[in-house]
Amino acid sequence: MATSTTKAPARRGALLHRLDIKGAPYVFVAPFFVIFAAFSFYPLIYTSWISLHDVELATLDVMEWVAFDNYVELWGDSRFWNALQNTITIGVISTVPQLLMALGMAHLLNYRMRASLFFRVASLVPYATSVAAAALVFTMIFERDFGMINWALGSVGIDPVDWEADKWPAQVAISTIVIWRWTGYNALLYLAAMQAIPADRYEAASLDGASRWQQFTHVTVPGIRSTIVFTIVLSTIGATQLFGEPLIFGQGPNGVTGGADNQYQTLGLLLYEEGWKNYQMGRSATVAWAMFLLLVLVFVVQRLTKRLRSRTS
Image (tube, rainbow, N blue to C red):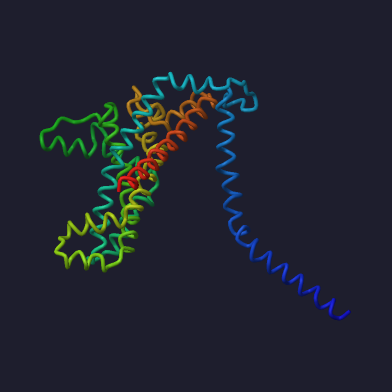
């Protein structure tokens, strides 16, 4: 009898131990999946459902089923293709110089230099600055009549540029804001990856007579290739969702439309215009899903390119 009473607590203890070993990992990761389901997965599914209806912002509970009519209309809408083109061009103009500058900055910070800690902290200041503050400052810098950029151009005999009214100057100005905000952040990502490269690789390259540039191209860049791919994907996502910089750069009603002629309207601005200016939430959700599908397409192309490279190599 005493033996059975002592075995029962032992069995319960073994059961609790087994549950702790097998169930603890699921308990630890459960908060992430709960938050993801509530704030990411559910909005994604609900947005796809709204995109199949004709629904206005003031009456979200009144929906009219239109199937894929919103997608058909979006496909034939010139504003969508203009916003897509602007998103791609601004993304390229901002991403390529940004990542190249970040790579060079990280390479400099990777070597021992005076006040390196100060420069590392300073590189994060633009990232910590709010989008509104940065966009307002750069808007004043690129102002047509009293901006610092036009003053500098005028001092060397170049006529002032209407940065907000013309298409390419406006896109360059917006890209400058993005470059300023994100270069330091990406530089620290590259720096962390560079410091993980074993020092004996550089020593071996130096013994083989490789110069600093050859060490950079043949040791550093291949060693941080995965981080470079990560920053490219991250920058692509950010460029697709670009919203705050062009909105504030427009200084008023033109910010939502991306200028008087939609010369710098991005997909994010088009989404906002359809939903919160035209009150067409169905069309706005359609634009959101077009942005999501665009990112999926970019991811698929990236994976296919990586697979083809691995086969050829």
